[in-house]
Image (cartoon, rainbow, N blue to C red; front, side):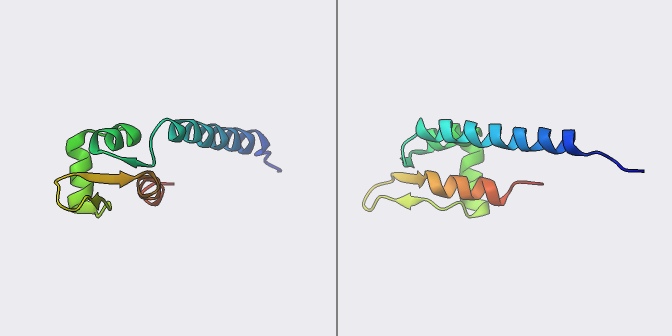
Length: 87
């Protein structure tokens, strides 16, 4: 018996392409270096969750010397999300 997975494969590829297109569109809407509010919105979590990711999970931030201001790079957020994706 031969099982045809072509429909399932096509659907999975289409979903992945749609997901990547959504990410590309979303990425264009945000600056390269974001404040915590922008960063939490970008990855779809609350500010409290973002703070937890920074403190407990090692999400890197850039501290502006002499201030309490931090910035989070879009690249760091994307890398964190990719490395924590359950497949």
